[in-house]
Length: 335
Figure 1 (tube, rainbow, N blue to C red):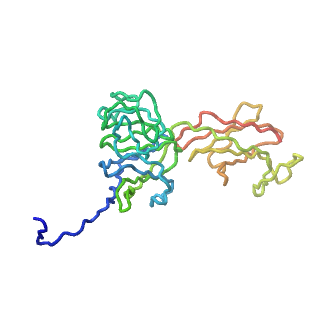
Figure 2: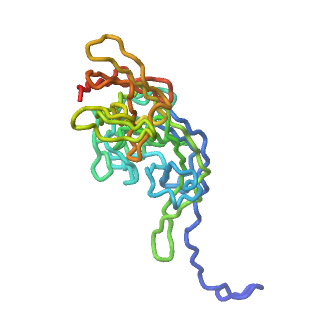
Figure 3: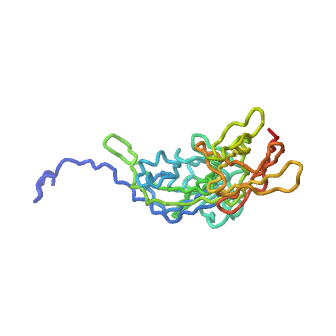
């Protein structure tokens, strides 16, 4: 049968087809804003169609329109379940793994239960462990057993490696309450190109927007300034306090107060008392103070007289309605 020619003629030489088909775009399932964190969930890719996911984050709606403007990824997340080999599990170098808290056989893992304290299957680790070259050793299982690892990343967020075909998840922790973030996820896999191995990326997923909340009490602000000054009655302009301590005509005494705070959308309440008195008098709230170009806050207390010593206290009310449990107090002596 050798050299027989069919009706279509001789076959062509072999043709090399590079493995460069991109993964399908990530399909988001849920994006939730929690206490100083955001939790993203998305549909899993079949094995071989994604090795890991690149997660991008920005505070700019305009930059979120083009993933190239969003900067470097804030996380790389494993796409496929971990499998034991030679008593080790390999995090593939793409995960931000600082400390592994638990490892379970996937067959007994219950994703609806608490990942650390509620699992019916035993934890294969005697205690939290670090990785070496992105690998965790001394796992007492045969080769090829699928496992679920529970670990903390460098921001101490609790993360869970993929479980079968369940939704993939990632938690972005340590964020400021009140901030608004935009996320996009890109699937990545290794392929074979004409020059060797290449990294193939999917199109970015649709933009996910999430508002971060802060359910805990905020810290009281820090005082940064308390100075006696003069204010011109004509235009409220500030002048230095006179060396002789006499307030000239057309001027009035004031105490310039300054403070810093990092609670987004917060309201600050200030009260004052003469130091020998017991009753605090509210003197400033939202709309009474200004934010300086340096990002601090400033208020002029004009209800003072130079011979007196004063005390001030301040507290913050966050955008969520929670307020600092303590006041930050300050004593201002007479000039």
